[in-house]
Image (cartoon, rainbow, N blue to C red; front, side):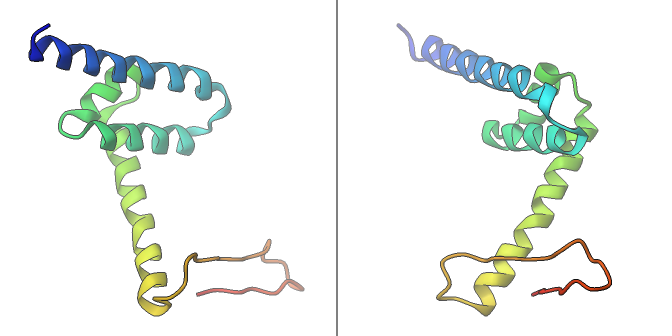
Length: 107
């Protein structure tokens, strides 16, 4: 089998995998979760991933781009934690409902 044919099969398998996961999870995801799921799948695919995932999921490319921006916004928190606590293995962020008697712990 030629290399090109193997690549096409691998790509088709990845697309089918994304489609399967999306179809199974979609009923349980809210709008934001759906957007973030699609954005992570597009990131895995690399170049052209947003368009491919848009075709698979039926979400708009702009929606998936917004999800990528949201995910990029989450990364600075991890960088913040590592910068200030370099020996820490995990960063724990705790909050409560924000009621008048509730305590808040923030970094």
